[in-house]
Image (cartoon, rainbow, N blue to C red; front, side, top):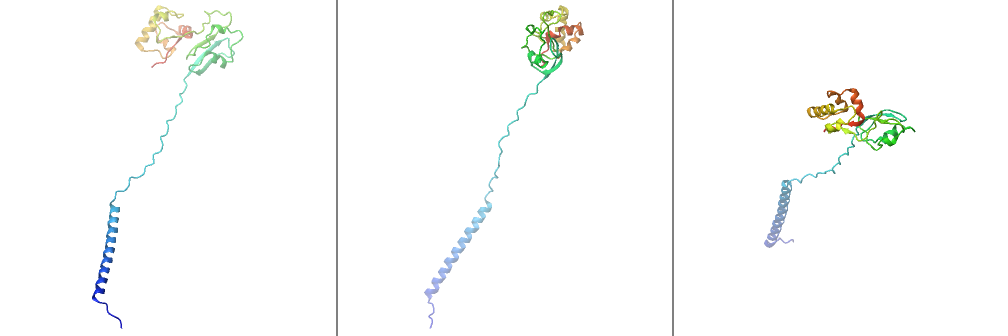
Length: 202
């Protein structure tokens, strides 16, 4: 016959059941609190991928072009459009070179070309007064009355008129502006063109 469990056996089983229920409850509570903590935790900051800075493009300066009238003992005389700052010897190469009769010792081949310049290459034996060749050019925007007076066809009165016009109207922007000066006509302008220049306006 089977023996019934005594009072001591029922008490031990109840304590075991209670302990197991307590453990399950504690685990459930811990899992619930962990879930709540995860839900309330602030979201991490988004990851930003910053590309490296793009280097600024290098700007290539655009050359300024000028026009020069080339005459005299050259293979191909005419009006040439060349970059500003080009030297006389380079222009002669573009024109096919000088003729065998050219007197190049009277020309400063290293001088820079200026816009509107009339460059004449003289022949050997040609009179200098009939065909002036450019040397150091006189800047109309800085020249004094005394310097202007030494130009061919410009006397003291015309030199003073040039300075007065410059002071009243501002710097000259091109050689042709001289035609606005009283007493300066086209013939005078062409006579002094090989000897003068105009500095760029600021």
